[in-house]
Amino acid sequence: MENTIKNKINVFGKVGKIITTIIIVLLLVAEGFLLVGTVVVAVLPKDAVTVDVEGSANVRLDTNYFGAVKDVLSIDVNGQKIAFADYKDDNIQTKTEDGSIIMDAQSGVQHYDLHAALRIAIVGVIQLASFVVALYFLKALMKAFKTCDSPFDDNVITKMRYFAIALIPCMAVSMVAGCFAPGSHGLSFDLIKVGFVVIIFLLTAVFRYGAQLQKQYDETV
Image (cartoon, rainbow, N blue to C red; front, side, top):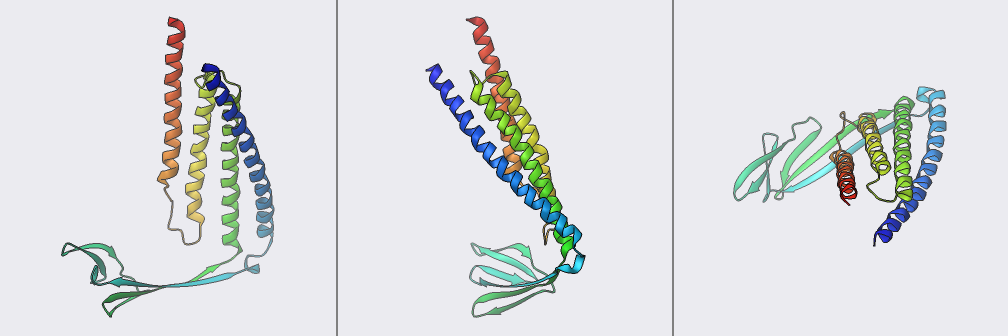
């Protein structure tokens, strides 16, 4: 039974190491192309390529469920009007027609040039590099699983902890990168990414506790 579990863990580590290596190679190739593209964009004049984007949206809300009073949208819940959004904006035109609230929104013209593309490219290079670094730590963790006699080996726990730490700058770079995206309104906060990092740290703590229990058991026996 013990050998069967050990073999499964070793196979998991072997397969994980192969898959991680393939992903690292692909990302390194992508990083190379992105670096070349960044250099090309940096060399070209700012106005070599310009893009003007203009958008519009038409929203229709059923007045049986929604209301609009003094630039505030509300929803009807059991006869009670509950306000949930303030749409006061010069680019939003609202009217009531055939039992519906019709909202026409215009985003205006957004102008982009190569300077904007350069900022995005530089952030992309840094973000991709942080992913590759984190994957190298994941690869080391998979290698530890491949050769371990127990998932509670000190080497496995150490590599898992290093991987969790490597995810922190990776997550931070990803959040900051949102500031440079077109139409961004500032720093983005992704609870899913934060939760994933927290889970890895929790797993590290669980494995460390398991190692302590195993050590106490071995000493008792």
